[in-house]
Amino acid sequence: MYGINYSFAIKTLVCILLLGLCLHYLPYPIITSDKLLVSIFGVFFLGVGIGLTMRAEAKLRKNDAAGALLDVNTVRMSRTAYTVKPAPLTGTLTLDILFRERGFELYWEMQRRTDMICFGKYEGAWTEKNNTDKNKRLFPIPQTAIDGASNLPGYLKQNPGY
Image: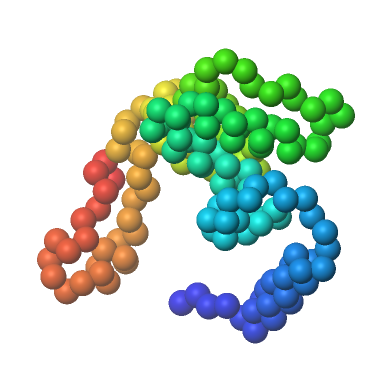
């Protein structure tokens, strides 16, 4: 059985409180005035880039390429790690270009596998991945979870391929 110990809980609480104080007292640039986006993704510090690229994907999949391009360019222009900022994208935004931009924005966020599945790129072979089986998109369910899920036989079935 796993649990959260007291020390971890206190440190987490202190971090959340300090972040709240920073958000309240320190000035930060307003990137978007979209209140839904701000409320879901936590203002400036907690993922505006993620939120904007998600919204860009939704717009692109609903055939609003111009709106998606605007969101992607907002993210590109907000990157500050470069001595020379990247140029805004022009022309037509495609899913392949958006996939690449999400790779840049979410490099350290552990989202690449999920994006590869979402954008239809996961079944390819690269580096040391040579298995293109679509069943391997899902991880195996631990046998203890299957056994403990219910007393009804067949209530929880193992993912195909495992």
